[in-house]
Each structure stands twice: as structure tokens, then as C-alpha cells.
Image: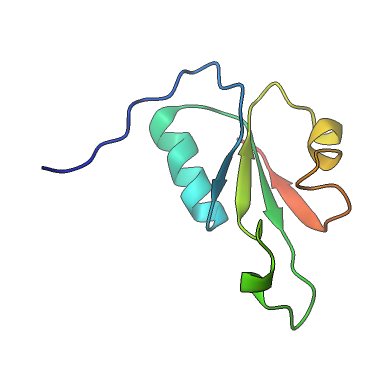
Length: 84
């Protein structure tokens, strides 16, 4: 039997992490959650496995860019935001 994910509530109040921004975009499109995706930029030569939160993060649409960049998982990190 195949495992299926339950459709999340449209009023997403939490964030989700993904290995890549493409995975986050696919999830956002499939479930219609909306929101911002934070795609981190690792320092040159950095080992991604060294960073426990190296993947992309999907934040709810209620978060503003300034709220996202002040979030404990993004504060002080380089990266970009991907909108809808």
C-alpha cells in the first residue's frame, strides 16, 4: 500500500523544511499552501551535511520577509526568499 500525505490545512501556521527549494516549490504547488521559501546560501567550500538546517524552509504566507529573516533558523544566514 502506498503512503500518502494528508492534505495540510490551507491556513498553515507552521513552517516545513525540504532538502531543496524545488521540493518546497512542488509541495507548495501541490497543496496550495502559498508562503515564502527561504533558500540558504552556504559559504564557499562548506559541507552541507555539517549544517543541520541546510535545506530550504517553507514559511506560511502570514510571515513577512522581516519576520522570516529574524526567525531562529534564518537569522544571520545568507539566502534568498522565493515568493509565489
